Image (cartoon, rainbow, N blue to C red):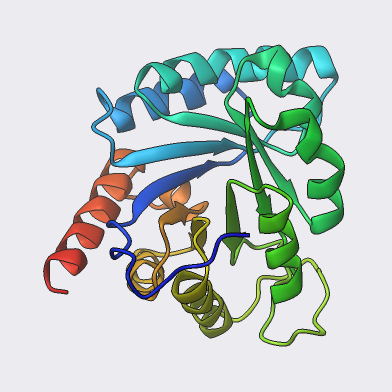
Length: 231
């Protein structure tokens, strides 16, 4: 696993990673994303599709309704799990939750596709994922269970935000593989970028907030740009 050296240049400004919740109608979600992302200016680097509970054929149709338009904008599309559907749907990779799930699926994805790792309960798990070829590690997603204790094990609750910031700062200082910080508010997005996250994942709030998806993505990009300018 590559580690950082003191002579390496500073990491570039954080980019956005959009986490799209399951939708009852994928065509509606596709329309909303298309409107929100415009022509694609590089602000949003990747989008993670969380899939509904459905038969495999329905999942393939679901992804087909959303992914191509995002990919045409230069946005990498990943599935939340479902590594077995990546090649069949033509998406760019999968996000795998937990070191066991990552280890089981990474061989089917690499080197052609992206293999991201989340749900990393300990620092050791994060290092194992990176050693196993993870293209990024994610900290702070609601189901990750990554806590401020090395003995904490994966659970259903999000770890304390201070622990997420600490984990990202540790990773950014020591390791070369990119890290993603999962934000549940605009303030969290700024804090995660300041801690050293290469990408900031925007959680469900950007879809549920009354200001609407386009305004929330724009606000997140502007906040990150402003915070970077004052460094």
